[in-house]
Length: 305
Image (cartoon, rainbow, N blue to C red):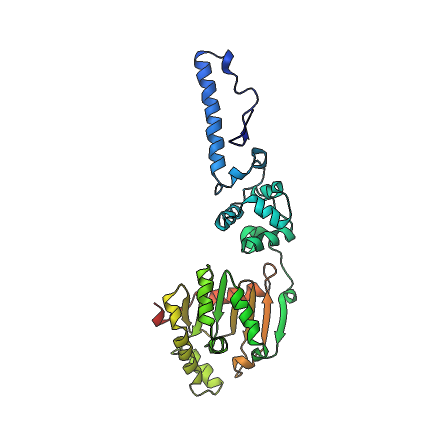
């Protein structure tokens, strides 16, 4: 027997107590009540997404994908909308929710529609990529990259903006609206982290001497801090680091611009790579781990907190 407004079935013959008497009838109705209660509990679980599914679609031998359920709930997207956006039927989406793993193309489409990383939804499906595949383009000097190229990725970032460099003053010099755009990105949930060289650190002074700048590098860091000071009262994190600066990293969601530092050569004259994350363990992940390693050894900028 199907209960339409609840969306699940009661086993055939369960509601037929007319031939039962006394304690047997009471026990029988208790069993049915338990079935109803358990079904309602299942319906209410999983970020309440199960209420959109018939019972036949809520039963699977796989492990429930709670990550996908949470992403749907957070985005306010229902199963029909997701199915339509990806180009599949709702039963297919129901299988994904119950643990079935989509093809790579569909995983990418789902993640793009929900504005998340596919690895966040299906962490065990990462594919080892060839290093060269993640290199989108390269410049022999960072200064050869036009400012509009940077601006595009800053404006389009939705999840993560990470900046690691000595002073990164060129960003504020080339993009007058940088702070306003970062504020808008943060208002939409983007996480912003900025790491600058500690102007009082021996490593910063050593790099200044190496480039023959006579204190100009330290001055640029301090000037950059002045420009970035409005971020101190926002959700952005601005920190100092005193480790040797092996490379500058600029991450914008799944795109990253990387400048390896060369001996005595200013950053604007050093080569730069544009990387795009395509899978697990590639160049992008290597430099992302580099950023996280430096981040773990930073100290808050005094004015930031």
